Length: 263
Image (tube, helix red, strand yellow):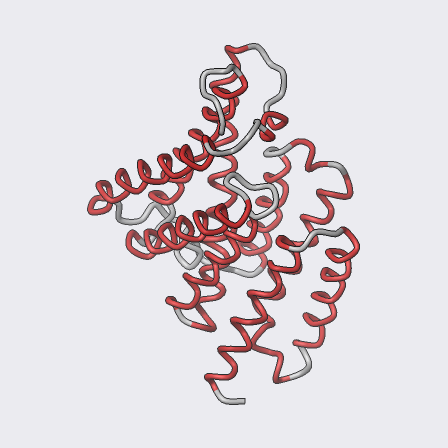
C-alpha cells in the first residue's frame, strides 16, 4: 500500500469511528463498535497493514471504554463531574505509563503574548454564534442540565461546569487526538480530523447540536487547533473554550428565568 493510500485509509477509518459512535444512535450499535475496535486494535498489533492504526486505536479504545463505563454505571448523570474520571485515567495512562511529555501533548501554557487579540476576537465571535443559534431554538431542552439550587450557587456552578468541560474537551481533542493524529498524517490533516471528532460529538446532545451545530463546532475546533499550534500550548484554547462554555450556561439560565425567549 502506497503512502497516499495509507493516509486516505487512516483518515477514512478515523472519520467513521466518531460517526458510528456519535452521529448514529443506538446502544447495541455502540457496544458492537466498541467490541469491533477492540478486535481491530488486537489485529493491528500483528498485521503489518493495520499497524498504522495501532497507536491511535490503543488510546481511543480506552477512551470509548471509559465512556461506555460512564453510561452503564450511571455516572453520566453527574455531568460534568463524570468527565474527571475519563480525564484522570487517560492522563495517567499517557503520562506515567506511555511516557508522553507535556509539550508533546500540548499540556503547557505556551506563548500567548502575540495571540491575546485573536483570542479575544474569536471568543466574542464564538459567543455571538452560540447565542444566535440558541435564540433560534424552540423551548429549552438544556434546562435539565441545571439542578435546582439556590440562585447564589448558580455562578460558581456555571464556572465549575465551564472549567471542567473546557479542560476535558481541550485535553481530548486538542491535546491527545491532535498529537496522536499528527504523528501519522501530519499537522494539517490532524487539525481537520480532530475538528471532525469534536463536531460529531455535539451532533446529538451538544450545545450547539444538529447539522448546524456540527458546522459551528467544526469551525470552532479547527480554530482552537490552529491556536494550539500557534501558541504551542493549551492555555489560549482552554480560555476561549471556558468563556464559550460559561456563556452557554448563562444562556440556559437566562431562558429558564424568562430573560430571553426562543423562536
